Amino acid sequence: MFLFINLKKRWLLHLLVTLPTLLSIIYFGLIAENIYTSEATYIIRSSDTQSSLGGLGSFFSKVGISRSNDDSYVVLSYIKSRDALSSIEQLLPVKQWYTQKGDIIARFNGFNFKYMDKKEYFYRYMSDMITVNFDSSSGIATIKVNAFDMQDAFNINENLLKQAEGFVNQINLRAKQDLITASLAEIKNAELQMKKEANALSEFQKNKNKDANLAEYQQILINNTVAKQQFEAATLSLRNAQVEITKKQLYLERIEQPSISDVSFKPARAYNMISTFIISLIIYGIFNLMIAGIREHKD
Image 1: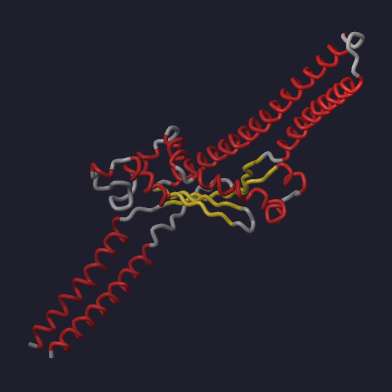
Image 2: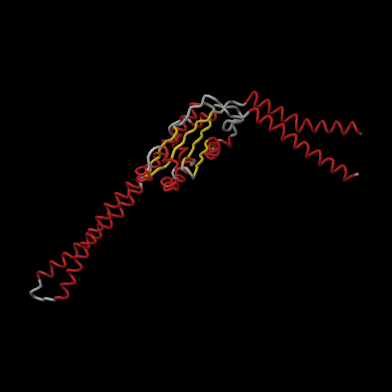
């Protein structure tokens, strides 16, 4: 009986500890290929921030940077979006890099499952390979791209930054168009009203000898003056809008260019092997306690 229990414990030990640890050693020691990381940092700044702050010290000033933090989150969302990935795929063979390089476990759809060969699954896979972090206190964002080739990681990171710069330019253009369109509409309405009042004044002056009405004439003069003032105010508003657009112009300013790492820190081979061994031991201990509890309950 004791021999049977001892053999059972050994079988459990080999199943829960020896086998997972051995598989971990084989994979991380012999199969897993190096993963290289390209890192870049940038900040979203506005024109008024640039004019009031100078040098690298300005990057860490909350006063100027906080104005663009909301826009930074928008840019971060774009970098992690499907649109950004689709744009990069039009420029680089991204999917080919992640399906033909790397080991069978780490690369995308390494076992060639047909149902996995979908854009959505590839997007989710790339969401793990591309990470974006934002420090709200400094306003600095960090992009990290993991790939099985150092040059591939650099190329993806560089193109992500270019796509983000283009996205920021689109935001600026859209804001400019909206503001100017609203100002021009205001000017047009004011101009039409001014012409209407000018025509009314001209018509009254032509017929004043036939049917003179001093109160009506004064009201027409007032309306004409108000219309001119509204037109001048609308024109001034357009000029102010153009100045405001320049002040609120956003810029993606690179702090650190995408790096080309010639050293691989992923996967963490020793760490993963030791972690597998320790976790397996913990699971083995839990199973032993459960078995002992069941045996004691039966007795």
